[in-house]
Amino acid sequence: MRKLKLNRQKNFLGAALKLKIFIEDSNGKHKINNIACTLLGVLKNGQTGNYSIPTESKMILLSASMIFTQKRAFIYQVPEGDDIELFTAPTGDMQIPENRFGVWSWEEIEKLGLSDKW
Image (cartoon, rainbow, N blue to C red; front, side, top):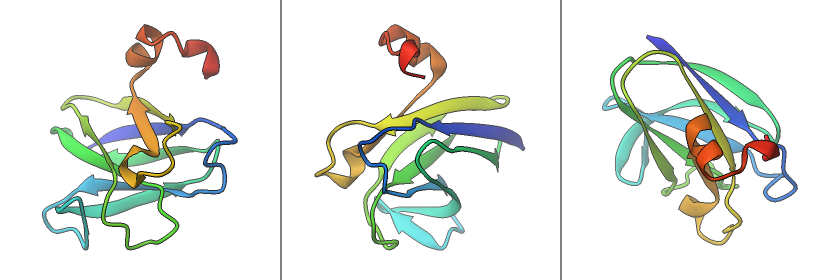
């Protein structure tokens, strides 16, 4: 097992939405985007979550729906390896559930020129 640290940017956009974090799991009780998954936790605006995940490559799914039975979510493929830190923030597209939030590594944030936003 390894640690996934997920930082949610404090932002006015989507501030009231709770971000539910799921991980791909063939024995999971939830089905989102037709993928069986397990709930890891919930992040509120500006919070950071620490989760134990397997060392192999897994999908994490982020659902910002007001309804717990959300059927669609943003998907991020976490590569295999050691502990990992990722960042999430609203994308600005609040109409389409799977586009409400995105996930980036620090390297991706720097490439986009957004490091001053964190």
